[in-house]
Length: 234
Ligand SMILES: Nc1ncnc2c1ncn2[C@@H]1O[C@H](COP(=O)(O)OP(=O)(O)O)[C@@H](O)[C@H]1O
Ligand SMILES: [Mg+2]
Image (tube, rainbow, N blue to C red; front, side):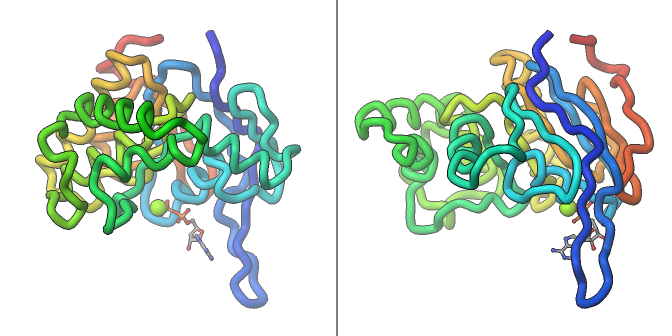
């Protein structure tokens, strides 16, 4: 069984004027290839901080992070940017699409940045939009799409470079319950059919339960890791 992500005793504090606010106080876990893991906890428990650190958007104060065998704390900022581009896909609560670009161009962009030819990038962006059920809307701009559709575009963009792992921070947080649930089902389907590894942050217990494993975070510490009863173990 391949370990895609390893976090070992990671600590992170934020400086607020003269005080240090501890966000993570020593967090360790692993994610296996093909798993869907949820990080579950109340607001302020450190979920976003943790996702930013494992996504190499920020560096911890202490600890070790391994992604696909790379110790991300030992590499330069440039190498880290490259690793992020090629190995990690991100999905955010507010979609973070570029408003002037069509769905197709938004999805194509990470491939173009990675140096893929225009023709190949377009072809793959179309295929990936089809995969998330949006082929009919690919020439629309984000403002012409519903929230659920925008999140599907963001998921397609996250998948386009065939990342080792997709990280999603409250991906349903800006959607109504029904649409949010459809987005969760889409990620679950991509996990089951394509074997895509996901780490999904949520404060919704119902969504947390869709994972293979639930990491329960509280006050910057892991309170427990639970194997989800509804899913088969990997
Ligand atoms: N940029 C920041 N500056 C100062 N404190 C922060 C910052 N980001 C997060 N925090 C604090 O760190 C703790 C964890 O926050 P966060 O990771 O956003 O939790 P969650 O995503 O679970 O709501 C909270 O106490 C929060 O106020
Ligand atoms: Mg958060």
